[in-house]
Structures are given as C-alpha cells and as structure tokens.
Amino acid sequence: MSAEFLAALRSRFPQAVDRASADHPAVNVPLAEVGAVLKFLRDEQAFDLLMDVTAIDWAEGANPRFTVVYHLLSTTRAGSYIRVAAPCGGMDEAPVAPSVTGLWPGANWHERECYDMFGIRFEGHPDLRRILMWDGYPYHPLRKEFPLAGIETALPGADVAEETGTQVVAAPMAGGPFVASSGEMNLSEAEPRAKDESWSDRVAQPGQTPLRQVKE
Amino acid sequence: MVSASTDYGYDSKVEGGVIVSRADAAINWIRTNSMWPMPMGLACCAIELMAVGGARFDIARFGAEVMRFSPRQSDCMIVAGTVTYKMAPQVRRIYDQMAAPKWVIAMGACASSGGMYRSYATLQGVDRIVPVDVYVSGCPPRPEALLDALMKLQAKVRREPAARRLLSA
Ligand code: SF4
Figure (tube, each protein chain N blue to C red):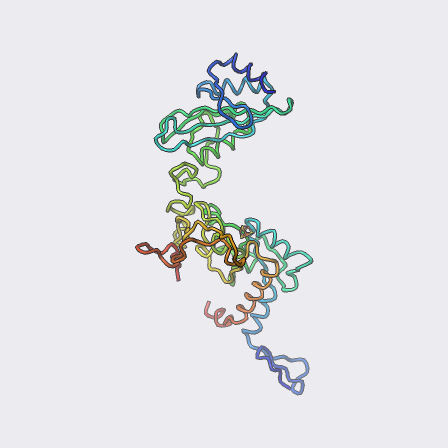
C-alpha cells in the first residue's frame, strides 16, 4: 500500500533505512539528510501536513542519546503517513537538530515543546524559547533522569517567591504510588491508597523535613 | 417587642421606622450578601463553577453571581482548577490586586492540595501562595458543594470584627 513513496524515497536517499514500526512506515535517516528528506516528501510525495515533531531519550550513556521523530501526513493521498527519525547531533547534554520551520511554519511550537521537554536545540528556529515550563526553569522534564515529582528550584516570579516564601518542591508522593485493591471487600476499602500511610506532606518521613512548610 | 436576634433591635412602641443595629452586624450583612467572586478558572473545576452560575444552581441566590474579571472589583477569589507553578505568580498578583477585605475559596482537589497531579509542574495546593478561607473537596466538587462553601464563608464573614478592623486599618 505504501510501497510507492517508500521506493521513491529509497531510490533518492539510499541512506534511508527502514525503522521498526507497528503501524505506519518509518525510516531512519542521518541527521544531515533530514531536511532534504522532509523537503522531498513534502514537495514530491504530497506529504503536506506535519503532524508532530517529537523526540526519544534513550537514557544517559546511550549513543546517540536523543532521536528526533517527524510525523508526516498526506491530506491528498488517503492513508499516507510516515515517520522520519534521525539521531541528534551534539553532545549528550546539548543535542542539536535542524529546524524545519522553513518547510512547515507549524513546526515552530512543536520544536519549542521538544526543546522545553528534552533540551534539543533546533538550529535555525526563529524563536526557540520554552513553551510549557517558564523561562528560566533549569531542567528538561521529559529526560530520563528527571524524576516525575520534580526537583526543588525557585518559583517563577522572584517577588512572589520572596513574599510567600514558597518554592518549587518535589511533589509529595505520600507513600504512593496509589494502588487499588481487588477482591471481596467493600468499595471504600478497594479505593486506591498509598502503600505506606505512615507519613504525609505534613508528617515527615523518618530523617527528612516535612514537605509542606506552612507559614503561620 | 424586642427581636431575639442580636444583629438588630426593633421596638415598634418607641419609633415606627427605626431599627437599631451593631456596626459589625450591618457591615457584615452587606459583605456577606454581595460577595463578588473573582473566577480563577484554571481547569476542569471551572466548568462546575460555570454550572453554579447557571440557572439550575443559581449562585445569585447568595448574592455572588457577579463574576468580576477585574480583581479591583471582586471580594472572593474562587480558585477553580489546577494551579501550575507557571501560573502561581499570576494567581498571587491577582490576589494582591484585590481590594481588602478579600477571601479565597480553594475549589476542588487540585486547588486544595495539587490533587492527582503529583508532578513537577503543579503547585501542591494554592494555600502555598495565598491564604485560603474555605477548601472544597471533590474532583470536581458538585455545584452544591461550592454553594455550601460559599455559605460557610458567609458564616465566617458574619463572625468577623469588621468595625474594629476598619477603625484600626
Ligand atoms: S480537582 Fe479534578 S475537576 Fe477540579 S481541576 Fe482538578 S482534576 Fe479538574
């Protein structure tokens, strides 16, 4: 079904190799080729819609550590969807990829989100700022080493932080994760609850300060 | 004849058209019955807040239907929804811009405690940045629960020493 554009892609770009995929066709291309491949798919294979730009973090120590993935859809040829993946260049901590905002203006926010969450710098992006977290946030939360609960850091808005004495704290897991019980019991017993209820955000865990510091 | 209420006294034998009251009772009566909300609708709870404003639940019965989108004109901030850390300074600034006296209702699990969002992006309870008068449980709370919170807040305001605070301010 999809053989035609894949064959055309392969004959034009011999470096493009098939990528394992459970649904749509997907290819791996070298980072240097990704701009040309996407332009070819857009202009000559009618992939006119950029659905998504996202990334994969293969965890610390992997080489390459990050892969960018572009999702394309053709609105004129029914059922045509392809993913193009490319390993990021640059150092582990500062990965880079070329921006495709020149091909699809809609890539702008996708790339900003990708930068915000993974720290991938898209070269040639007209306005590469964070989009979800605030400017000045020091981490990239979707990286593997970043804990879901977050890391202690300053609240945005220095005046408010000073006035309230509040900062960004690691979210209290309060004995979580919260698990439901199954079996013969009444509904309120079966509700999800923490495995360890001996501490909360007001009552400290042994050897730790309580998470919630309420100013009286 | 003297009424049993301590909020006002009325004696028809003395003077037909005169009611005697305490300053606190009069001020608090005014405040409780025209508590204009600042709708801080940040997530799904705001939908229930809108329902409370609608005809079926009708928050107008309690004098709080005048949703003011200017903090200068509002008395009670209803924080309805998930407060992210990115939004937190703005919530505090809007609270700071409200004229005293002012109150805060934390509506729903998110505003009260961060709710199910035990994550890096969510403020774990709006009481970390503004003083909260009434917390409403629920995800989202039923509209009746918000009305109940409003009535609780009105009861609280009725007990305030309003006149003394005004004079010492
Ligand atoms: S408490 Fe529930 S309904 Fe309300 S904002 Fe949070 S998630 Fe949405």
